[in-house]
Image (tube, rainbow, N blue to C red; front, top):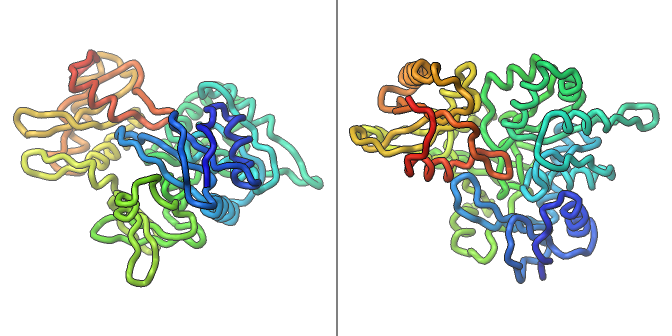
Length: 386
């Protein structure tokens, strides 16, 4: 099966191409890459290529069946209605917003341009409609940074506050959501559903720790594995990588190795962070995801990003990158951070410094660009430090 030329990043162009690929006889859609692709497996709807937050590119082959299974499972869990596209259409979260809208036979609302709370509110409130006298539920998908911006704006903008309350559910994925942000959302009347998954699972397939219908979870040697009809076919032209990350067990079940650590408690998944996002500080393994989660639990530090740095004494250490903290506060912030992390994770896990920047670099998906931050810090880039 042939794949069409790379789709424009325009949401409307992706919408048209993806509708033909999923519902019609159109060619598979190439998303997130420039060079044209050749042959793909029969039944492919999209090839989503993303470098992720670490800068390692991957081209994930998603079938029509996997995307449709994911969309129907989502509808079975949270209901169906109208969807607002507020994340890039070239990423799997955006793809799934469009597929859910197609299958509900409702035209999605599309938020164009850079994300800002005011246009989001206008688009959300403009979705209000009724069917046979009943209000049509509305839904959207966001990353944590977008939700936080909306909550900040809602403090002084009634329309933004109203828009947050208008959704039947707001799916949050892409990275862990700080508990304090979740609490703020609940206080604002926003119905947030935390999702876990990746491009390889057609987007989120575990909602608030519970797998969608048909999805199985397992922990193998501390690693989270997922199975079910939402799994991707694998990686384009990378059979060895596909075989390694999509193993088949003795029962014939095909799994996806997420690379995340976690545990399943009473049927609920708890993810601890990336297994490869670990440093060795003073001979002790330290999970930077756990450090970041601890830092983000502190009031006012919900947007913190923790990245590795070299350390002359400990071998490896970490830095906390923060946006918009007043200079006079940096030393006290470092003290708070080191005390909290030391108490929760031990002395070797304590970050070495805090760096304040005007803005944390982000990928198009809204996730922090950790690879850029590591390069920036290694180069001794300027910033307010403590």
